[in-house]
Length: 134
Image (cartoon, rainbow, N blue to C red; front, side, top):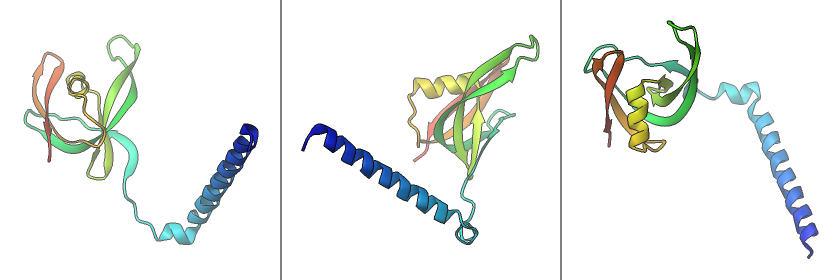
């Protein structure tokens, strides 16, 4: 069989698989099927701020997102790298410079269970510690 024929067969198989997946999704979307399902996880991220030293949260690290904000003093728009966690079936984010730096330095993998503890404030910077949970 020639290469072009193989590619055509692969394209057709892929198109059929995609069509079947779409049909299955359409079926899943019926009111009857959706009524049987229960909420599992809130995907809309909420900022998680730790206020007092020794406060902590336990969560699963799930990656990064850009956080757009306006600097209160300069009015300048900034983009910060924020860490995403699943905490009690909700997505939470935190863009603390020390926290983000520690996660990157330690090369924490997505899916890692962590305790994030607020230790102290140095100037305007909050210092956090990361503890692996197991």
